[in-house]
Length: 448
Image 1 (spheres, rainbow, N blue to C red):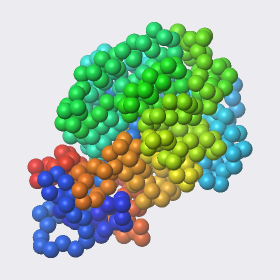
Image 2 (tube, rainbow, N blue to C red):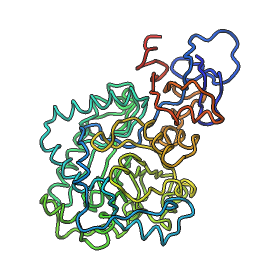
Image 3 (tube, rainbow, N blue to C red):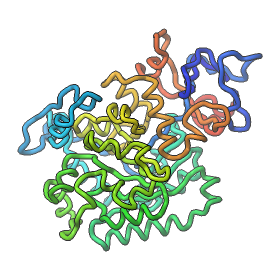
Image 4 (cartoon, helix red, strand yellow):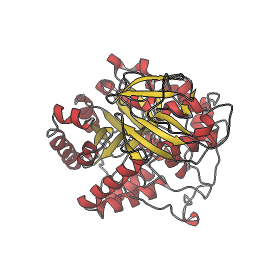
């Protein structure tokens, strides 16, 4: 098949290019084609299917609270310097602003939002959560997602994901500072994992993993047991300044939040005072870690996230969710500085409880417009880097002979630009087709 542009990712865009597919695999990608293509898709871009490196399919929408209610009490508005988060930002500036809380009366208090998420979860039965998974999974497929990392309650999303045309790692959430709560979530997770055999994982194109939720909600022993499992791991880390305050002082708004929930354990001690301790201390280094958010790492900690810092080939990557990050008014994310230091940063959507859609393309477009981020880099973050983080880069994430034909087809505007990536990212035109293993699964070409 042919299109106006092919974006292989591991190579420059190809105008008027073609992709040849044989038995679900990419057989060839190029510019010159002998003969007439079976399918001319027209004024579209063909890209690899998008990889959503962090999402929660079981959550439903939680509307933003009114602007007048968003103020963080007792704190003056503060705005970070424009250069913050770039490679040139100084450690002193980073420390100054990473430990500040921002409020421009247009951002939402994340702890107040967490209370609303918990209320939603407590008011939802298993059928409600499963319906949300089905609805959000469909939205993901329509948006061109062909691989995702879902964090869920004891594998609740597995049945829907395993039956869908999508690759996935499904992370069972581990939560609990108090031992009784931790034992329950640990037991529930392993009850689910024990029922999934290797053959089922292969046929489902999906694998189970574990997700110690966050340093402020998950005890030390749960992190260590997760690392000992040798399963893929994910955790929310360096997500908010209140988390850093709790790790350093055992005080602050997060402690109050946990006390109000009855979830605080007075005997709790963190693994260490810095977020990096939760993936790098002792045997915690002996695991693959997918870090959700990662905003408040300091530059002198970045080396711990580089592939070279991992032992025995274990992988660490950061899943950045730009629009969720923006909703809560966090310090500018250091993703550019991280990338320049050799850290793998991929893109996630988080959940519809915190972002308008489950479109990875929308996340990349947000960064392009806000930061004028490099188009080739954004496309790589949205595809190949996510595949690498989930150990699937030899199967998907780029258009390369031998890989699975997992594709997204994006409508393009009728204009010419110097950089073809601008046609994708400086546009509001939608994904119009999704292909998985050589078959269109969404869009007008289904059945062709």
